[in-house]
Image 1 (cartoon, rainbow, N blue to C red):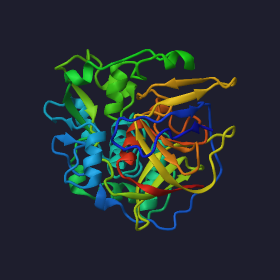
Image 2 (tube, one colour):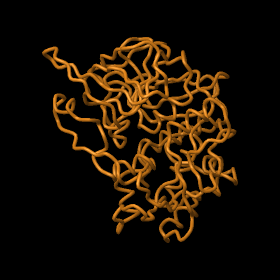
Image 3 (cartoon, rainbow, N blue to C red):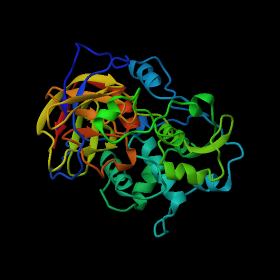
Length: 374
C-alpha cells in the first residue's frame, strides 16, 4: 500500500503546495466485489454542452466552475477545413446489425465522455474501458446493462440534438505553451528520479495526448505528417466539459474497476475507469472520507532497507497530478503517469485514475465526501 503522509495542516486544492507521499508502485490487478447502486438516475441534465469553439471552459461563478477552470486547460478550436477522416468521425452513426468501425467507435467514446462516463484515452478502439463506460451510462439511465451496444442505448446516447451537434474531432492551432514545455527522461531508479527538477512529460506528444484525452498513437495517426511545431494546425479530440455537480460520495467498484460519483441526492453524476488495488496490496474495505486534496503532489518512495527518496511533482509522478487523501491513512484517489494502462495495471491499494479524470474529480469532490470500497 502507499505510505502517504500529510506533512502540513490544511492544503488548498488549488495551491502549489505539495504533500510528501511515501510508497511503492507495483504491478497488477482485479478484485472481486460487486457494487450495487441503490440510487441511480439520468445524468443528462449535466451533459457536456456544445462548446462552440471553446472546450473545458466552464461558465458561471460557482465554486466548481472556478476550480475546474484553474485545473483544466481551456481549449480553443475550429471545425474549418477538417480532413475527410475527421468529418467521417463527426458524422458517424450506428444502426443495429452494422459492423462498428473506428469512426463509429470514436463517436461512441466521445458521446460517453460528454455524458460523464469516462472511457480513458480516446483511441478509436472498443476496449474494456469503453464497454465499462457504456454500462455505467446504461445504469445511470435505467437501461439494461449489456456487453454490446444496442439500439436502446444508442438512442439514449444520441437523443440530445445539441450534444449531437458537437464535433468529436476538431482543428487546433499549436501554441508556444503547447510545444515549448519542460520535458525530461524518466530514469528507472527512485534515487535518480529524486534528482529530477520535476516529473515532467517525456515528450511533447505525451503532453498533447494528455491535454486532449487521446492516446498518443491515435494522435499521431490523425496527424501523420505533423511536425508538431508552434503555429501548426493539427486534428485533436474535443474533450468537452467535465461534470460540474458537486460530488459527495464515490464508490470504488473492484469488480468493474470503475469509480462511481454521486451528488448529495444519491444521483450518479459521473463514472471514471480506474484501477483499485491488487492481489498483493488490496484496497481497504468499508467506508472512509476525503481528508485532504492536493494538486501537484510529490511522492516519497520507501525502499526495502528503509531509505527514502522524495520524487518531485509532475504528470509522471507515481501518483500523477492529484492526491485526494482518505481518512484511512496512506490510502487515496490519485492520478497516473500512464493513462493507457488504467484498468490494466495495479495500484498499491489506492484508486488510480487518468490525470484528467483525477483533476476533474478534484474540482468537484467535497471535503469530507464519502469514499466506499466494494
